[in-house]
Length: 315
Image 1 (spheres, rainbow, N blue to C red):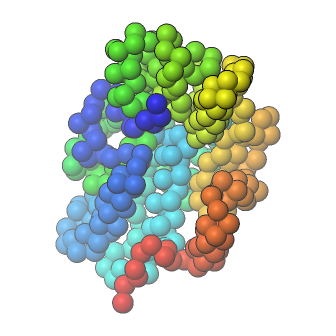
Image 2 (cartoon, rainbow, N blue to C red):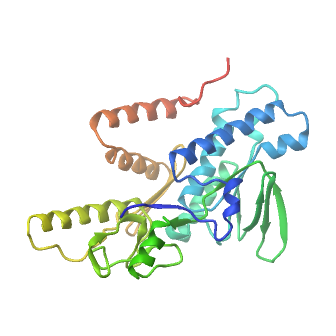
Image 3 (spheres, one colour):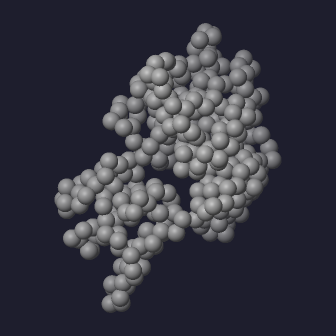
């Protein structure tokens, strides 16, 4: 069972209509359309308030996904699109990163979080911490600050990156088997990743609750490979391996071109070196030599120039 996870709206599922997440290709295409569409509509708008609302982009959640998204939107507005429009100045777009937490990238520690916030602010991103989103509609959102006061931010484009929830399949498994389940919908499993009382059912990836494992790609990859080996041992009547052991290879988050942060064991890396490390790691994990070369060429064109191959420029 490897059904993954989706965005968590913490009991406010109605927010999804106005602030989609980014957990699938469909989600990514939807956000792409909303972001580019906001710039196009701002170009046609006559009212200053409408232009301001269209050129305000809010990202909710200051984890790795939110940080990367805020940085990408800021770079898109300030570097990629600034020559594509006649009436609006895309560099005046307002990009806001919200989070109820007291720092950016909490799992990375205070030092790297501060570095990431500094890099975002250098890009022009407004980082607002201790800010809890309490309402979202088509024209903006309402934020509650630490002192309990509420304020409204008018913005057409909102991106939700504030949390994840395991697939609903996890709750179905729990109901059918009596297995435990946590608030995020993850299923409690045995040390060999099988369901309690059901040794023929393996659960892997974002659906497992075991030893406080994080919801990272490496957990999914390593748990899947472990489960495959266990199944192979059974088919060959071999002794099973010991308990699943997760090897933490570190965490990385890109902020923009040439800027990233990385936490590898006790090693803290920032700036260009962290960004280069991120590129190398992702290149290694791309399947197939041809795909690696293609990705490398696309990256080179993107980093050297100011355009994006995915978007046709104006004539």
